[in-house]
Image 1 (cartoon, rainbow, N blue to C red):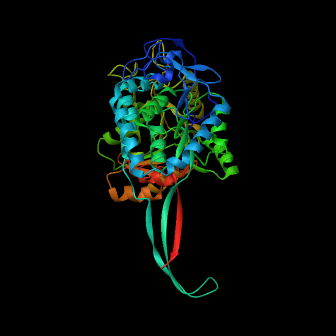
Image 2 (cartoon, rainbow, N blue to C red):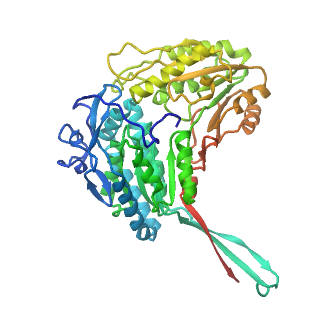
Image 3 (cartoon, rainbow, N blue to C red):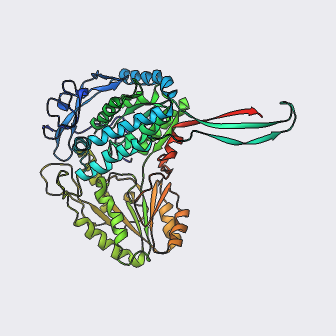
Length: 529
């Protein structure tokens, strides 16, 4: 999303000092050791992760690069740099595996996904420790919302869903095409084929799981290209799938910082579909390549969620403040669904700004390993500089920095304080562009029509929010918003509801049964009688 970078095949990671404490994970894929559920030090991830191609752990042609802990700036482990040839080999392996895998019984595929879910759940702590070290997420977030959600997503698709349904019979009169007949029909969902999954850096567990699990459930095979900033967790997921019994070539994982890695994974003639989570800019480039080959696409792109707070919201604004405040605390604002663009009706504008500022100031920021920490670091020094440049841009555009806007006094780590920009106009870049950090803008509005107009005056349309005690108005406003989802007095989600965006926020829908639809084609079988 935005400059999430995870989807950008060419984004380079930050380099840092080597340390052993953060290197956690499992397994033989790293060369020397087979270790389940125990820390790996310099004898594990720091000796170099291998690629996963055609059921084998392969040494990367182009060596390794360091993955940096954004909290300590130390090296978590060494990630493999695949060559374009290795990426194409992974795509070819997925193509070879597609036929047999697509013909397996849905019950067999579901059972495998169930076993993978249990393996991941059994290694929650070491997997979450690695995720925390790679991403800077707090321990609680890494356990519950990264690894925990990944296990839940594999479990969700470990059940057989109906893949065919009858179509109402049609009476055809006699004509050039034949005699009169009753034509029956059956619609059947078929797998698309080989799916390239390009995943984001903000959640190296839940995001890949949300692509891999429904794709496999439908009988597709996958080539996963994880974000260069935190690919090690995705290799742990591949390890769990291999242990669960996934056949050779059904799941492949290739990584690297070079643009050529992502390009090869998208452009390969063996690939039928690309599922991408990342910035709108990179999404456009991928769509151009897919268009040349008529490849199917599922794109979850940028967001600039509007949060409309009406004057009749709850008396103390507590629910609105807590919901909007998740932009500061959840992944340090590195999430596409965040309510980053607050639109406050004038009677509550000053009070809302005051309470949001107070909320931002009291959030503990620091070491993600500390249970008291709420806000961890941004993913890299590069991304921190980008977020800081937006804060400075907001000042120049006339916004008032009410809270934050500077770095906390920490010796190491890519931290920035949660920042609130008030008195913003909707034409300011800080109110229009995805910052992808703990930065919230606030803009006043007078009446419902103006609030809706401001919310819809955006290039994005992923998820918007409405806070109002008048539920009839909340639903009325929601129906007028040009967004793929709308939260009414909440930022929580229903994980069976379709997820995706309007406008430049994406193409297609996934989550729940809708993900099975996304990773399938519909075939019609017609017969007389």
